[in-house]
Image 1 (cartoon, rainbow over the protein chains, first blue to last red):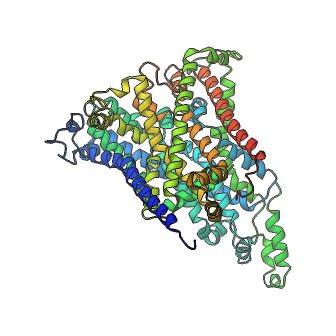
Image 2: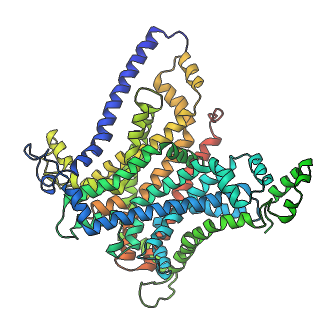
Image 3: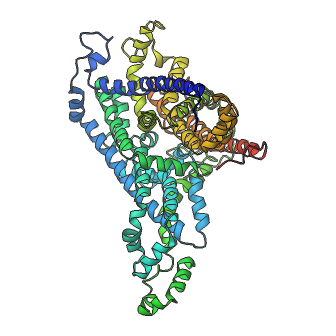
Length: 286
Length: 328
């Protein structure tokens, strides 16, 4: 980059201007709608559903969120979504860690076949096997059950998790394990004390993806749950939208959707490093 | 079931060194190494999950697609009838065609917008990290939640979509977007392009950052314009990443369900019914599980074909023109 010519500098001025324009446009197009959605959730339903007027548009209130807390179905649905997503994240992380360790550090006869099996399931879209999956879960008494939903979400997220965790274990040098053996560590102690610090990023990536994928998952929940007490947040919001809890309340809908949105944004922004790591490992899978 | 030879062999080597004499019993007791079968025991839980909840349903789907399976009552084997009626069913045909049209509409805009955004943020500039985070947030929030927001904003007279269009003197602000097939389709396409191009952006951006800077420097010395560099260097070198992001977006569009269920429920009539929504209705509203399974299998075949064709396109060009050398 030695000797920037006059024309080169002029071009970079143009580029800076172009970048600034792009920056402002992007903020308008991508941030404003999300901020407006947040703003909406503080408007009373009557204002949301009326033509905007200067007199009422900025009249903001917490009433939608208060209503959300007192409307039994919605409170329960937020709890259900959180429970299902957290347990799914933990279970996916646990199973992926064990399997990742097994696939990366052990050689047994059918290991390649089993790994291929797990990777191939990544290509079977769960949307396409929903009907038999429903029959299967029904036969196992796992429809209308939070446990059933957790097992289903865990399976959907497992192939990716196993992939990430296998990569994580493969990058650990063999010497480290050897020294663990010499110190007398068994399989469990090896995982918990010797290898843990090195696989925590992979575990975080796996758990984050599993949480985000199940927190507002829609089609599976819609198919496997019919009992309104077990509904997750998106299903309860469909009921709000259709007026199943009385009259259609757009304030409640806006507030509920904001509650669905906030954990995604907070977790993503806080754990962005792990999210990007996951994308990178997913991108090389082919 | 011969397990852990790699560990054993390594340990045999270590323990034959002098240090082994210090603690010789360890190996005999077996605690120094993993017990036999540890490897398979570690992977078994994950394999069982995948087998029970993916593999078995897949096989069951193939089986019941050959029967007149209803949710209640007995059923019998009817051969390929479900497949024949699926392929001749105008409703399924319409749903497939609609899904293809929808996929065709959104795919190129997602790629182009994703590419433009990746170009915008690929270099470290003031605020570029913030912008990368922001552009990806709609994807992280997800189409389900975003669809609920759009329900409010598509209302005639009060929704932001209508208010903005009226302020720009494009419409009178009274458009009932969700009760018209073409209008709802257009609105959903805009939503989807807006929401998921962030993913394409991130994928392309990481690909772009992997291209060595000196390639561009020498191109600039040869007097290449920005567009020439983009066309002759970036796009050829990104071919794999571009194909990958295309596969992800095409498959995603082809399996679209949530935004359609929430915003239009497939209506008016079946005007905006996608393939997955059609199968969902057939299985869980009309309770024709055999027919729905046959359509599911056809859907798996179609998505498999889409993936195969895109991979094949990639391979084909890979062996062709000599632009591959600098990759990686």
